Image (cartoon, rainbow, N blue to C red; front, side, top):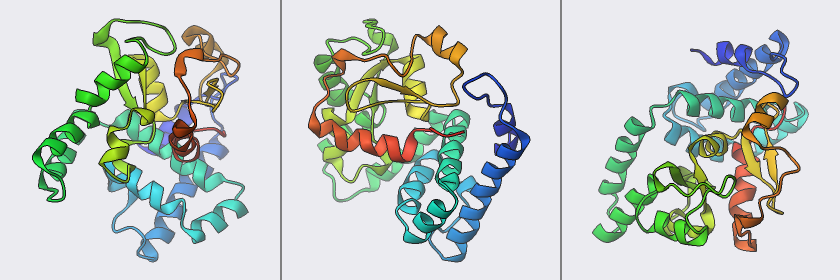
Length: 248
């Protein structure tokens, strides 16, 4: 499925499909960003030819580029919304297992890391090892939304994506993680849901009101056991700016 086709199948909060015009605008917005970034040698290949790992790195770079900031403001944030919608599309289309293998190979080649750190970082990438153990301890082994405690369905998820973490410390930090059951992890990881600094849930406009009721999530629901602290704000802020799909 192509991005434009996917856009045309997405629903707004009221349950209506995204309009043809809006779908076209977001697709064209992505095309424009790709064109300008390639022409200025800001990226070395089309965003649509990138893996999710490469895309996260590219988006984190593009969205702080002054040229992009200027055009995004002029376009009333249409370009950043186009990028975040495309990332959501890419995330939902990605075979994460194959992506993990590629990233693991890159870690093993990193000469700046010793063998022990490489093992810890690789396990943290897939929500395992000490990273998962710390999150299980922090959240009493329960999904912060549902309180489900079956270990097999709990996922140790990074708030700021693993790919764009600046160092091993960020990748292994319990402050950069939350414990969620499968469905909610996918919603969060794809950018269809996030958490405000006060612990309340914020849902994407791509989640219909009907589905939000089924999922038992809404913008007024507060997660008291998120164990929020100031150090988490840095990571949640990143998720808000670069991952969360907010606008139509």
